[in-house]
Image (cartoon, rainbow, N blue to C red):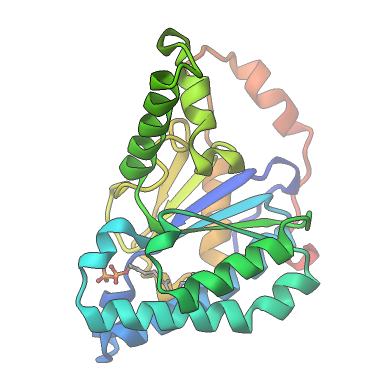
Length: 259
Ligand code: FPP
């Protein structure tokens, strides 16, 4: 298990959970069994991040484009979300996790939407880790929706179009409430962002792994964080080695057994 430093963790970790179908295929199981095993990996990952002290974890649970999948698969995923929201509720409340969602939640069937909204309002004041579920989510759609709202405001004379800048646009994007993504993890061996948090990933560090999502666990999470902690983040600026390295050298390492 790689060593990671607890005092320089990524604040916001986001995950593209890919490879459920291929995992199921390898196991000679239906695709839906891959999603079910994927929801166990979700539970493991949420627990591991919470124990570590990650501030925000965003999971790409369902994209706007996923609606195009076969009806039976969409239905199976909706049933899994429902089951997850019911089963995890006690632990979420006990451990102080704040659940929020981003995406066109109005497209979800009522039996998922009502549970999601209930858990969001029940946990809104909790100050443990934030678990942000991107569900019926698309990064381009989120930006287009925000642009439309700004255009409406400009049309109504509420804002001056000349005043629109990256800050006012960001303020219209629900996903920016969780802050910028520090570490984006993608499982399943593909090297793309697939319309995930396009705005929030502007300066994210990417970690790609061939591990299929149902096989993802604490060890791979630690590997991703360890890789993140070796990166030199410059945010477009010039950072001298001394300035970027100095705080790191003062930090101690702990093994997972201590967390
Ligand atoms: C991509 O794998 C995964 C999804 C489209 C769904 C993600 C959903 C889960 C992990 C299930 C539970 C989630 C929660 C939040 C309870 P894929 O089907 O595209 O895999 P493939 O590329 O191997 O076909």
